[in-house]
Structure formats: C-alpha cells, structure tokens
Image (cartoon, rainbow, N blue to C red):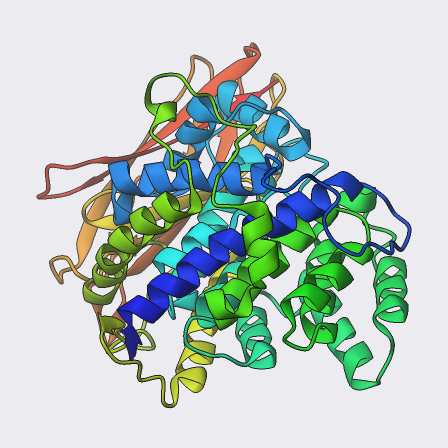
Length: 498
C-alpha cells in the first residue's frame, strides 16, 4: 500500500498535539472514580502539564535512533528504563527493581508484580504506531516488547498491543470501528482486555448512553483489583469517548475524561487517536492554540544523553517521520523478531510517496494484526527471550524463579531458526553453567530442522534444575547453546532466588 508522505506527517503531528491536549486537560482529574462533568481546560493558556504518557515515548524514540529497528526489544528497552526513567510508581518501580536485582525482561514484569493489569504501557503506544504506520503487526510487536518489561504477560501488555495496532491501522483506515476490530485481532480473544472492548461495542450497538456504558464497564472489571488504575476499563473508557464522540474531537475527549479514573491517560489516548484518524484538520484550532507546541517532561533523567529529547511536538514529529521509512523498510525486507513466521507477512509493503492508495487494505491489516494476536496468545509468565545471528530462543520456567535447598524447578526451551539465514538443519550442543551444588537434568544435544516451506525450523527441550544443600540469595543460571560447525554461541540467563 502507499501513504502520502505529507498527509502521514500531518497525522503524526496531530497525534502528538492531541496527546498533549488530552494529557493537559485530563491531569487535574486523575484518580477520580465518579462520573465527571468537565467542559474543557482548567489550566492557563499556553500551560502544558507534564505527563509520563508522553515522556517515556521520548526515550523510546531515543532508543530507536541509537539502537536501530531490530535491536529495540524488551532487553534494550529495559536498559533504557534503568538509565533514563526516573519514577518508581507502581509497575514502573516493580519492573525496575526486578531488573536491578538481575531479572531480565520480560520476567521482570511477571515476578512479584501486583500491577500487571495496570495502565502504564498502553499509554505509551503512539511511538510504535507512528513509526509503523499501516503495519499493526509490527506496532503491536514493539508495544508488547515494551509492555512486558513492567507488565510481563498481564493484561497491561494486551492493552498496549490493542492500542498500538488500532493507532497504526488508523493511518490507512479512517473508520474507527474497523480500526477497533484490527486492534482486537492483535490480542487474545479470551483476555479481559478483549472482552471489555467487545462488551462496550455491544453497549454502543444497543443504544446505551455513554454514562450507562461506563458504569457497566466499571462493574464488569471490579474484580481486577487495581482500582482506578486498571487497563481493561481505562482503555475501554477511551473507546467510549471515541465511539460516543462520533468523530468530534472535543466531544470525544470530554466524554472519555468524564468517565473518570485515569483521566490524563484516557484523554491523551483519545486525542492522539483522533489526530491520527483526521490529521490537524480534525483538531480544534482554539484548543491547539490554547495548548501550544511545547513538550514538558516530568519522568526523564535530563543528565548526559537524557538531554537529547524533543522539546516540541514539531521536533518530535520531524524525528519520527525521519525514522519511519527506515523502520518500515527494515520490517518489509526482513521479518525479524520472535513473532515472525509463515507466509502471511510475505509481500506486504508500505511505501511513502505523493499519493495514498489504501484500497482493500482493511482486510490485509486485519490479517496482519492476527499474526501479532497469535504471539500474544503464546505469552507465558516467567519467560526469557534471547537470539543470535542464527536463531531465536526462549526459556520458560514452570513457576516463579524461586528455589530452596534441595528443591527443583522445571525449564522448557524453545528454539526457532531464523528464516533469512542459511537453510540447514543444525545440531545444537546444550550446556548449563550453574552455581556450585546445582545440577540440570535433560538433553545435551538438540536437532533443529531447516526453516523452509516444508519444515518449521523449530526445536524444544525440557530440563529439571535441582539445587544442592546450599543456595545463595541469588543463584545465576546460564544455558549455553552452541551449533556444531558455527562460531557464535547463544547464552540465556536467568536468576533463581531463595
């Protein structure tokens, strides 16, 4: 498909402008659980309120610029978290604390985390959508890598995939309901996130008022336990604003914020999504002039490289649109990452030029989003991903990474050959590097078949790790995978705590 570059750039700017408008308008009401009745801004003209919803995305932009499209994953984003993101709120704090104690992402988001179903990830999805326009599978892949750092396999990760896929699709499909369907295809049908969105779509079709629909959603998800800060309801409040707003920017945003709860997040996401759908022409001029162009941060360490962040929506837009053709081109020519397999992605390209051609693209985007949905369904707690030039691998523990003297834990290994590399079967040598007194029972060699139309290139193995009579507070496990006839080993690391 083809995207007109100037129209795309206009939508990106409108996205960030809408994000700033919604964050500033919604922040004064954050955490209020009752239905609200706001009319507009309560801030002064030209005053932009700082918001972590946008802050974190400035760091992800920096990561993309410095690491490259194929090196931005949960691990690299986790390192950026530790270096540049200041707050220790809720899941932010748990994710960082787990990483600092040695737990690699995405295990950092699963272990001892009461905030897996919260709002911290879907609120930072626009960077992935804007650098991957009309590529919902890639946007959702990045959003999941991002979200897993502090949400693991929880509903917060599904929420991020949904929003990123919806917003990516909105660059090519100017039909909100179709964009919602594409977003839903990117997450498991059985997830609370998907159930909540489908529930509110039914409320809309029945002709319910927005307030009745909001109350019904709040009741539906009352058992989640994060109060006003849980993702399934708050994402759905943003969808309520978009649906009942009927294409009107002001009505959409005010409706979402009036649902209460995490109002800066719902308002900001509605504003960003409306900006992508309709461009700057859809953003009310009096509101855009009221808010201005500046970006004000609150969550970023400004020392050293942290200073290299955009100061305005105009600068942010310029840097995003410079990156997008590179990111899109990379994912068009080479399917990299643990989510890519099969023929369903073959032949799909996005080109930037001076015309827009989106004929028949809805069906394509729906199918592409479903690829991300299959990945989302496969997410399991206590998993660690790794890769080298030849293969992807992941290790999944059968329970939390804890062990006592004389105890044991089950470990499952999955390996996938990279489809763009040499098409050959491989014999892999498996060697555990363990602390004194620990042992590992399981295979020592593994054959992976060639990756071609007749073979999946996959392999798997199961192990049991047993502790000796003495264990330390932290015990580091490393699996070395070495392919015969090759010179690049792969190492997978995880700790076990006593």
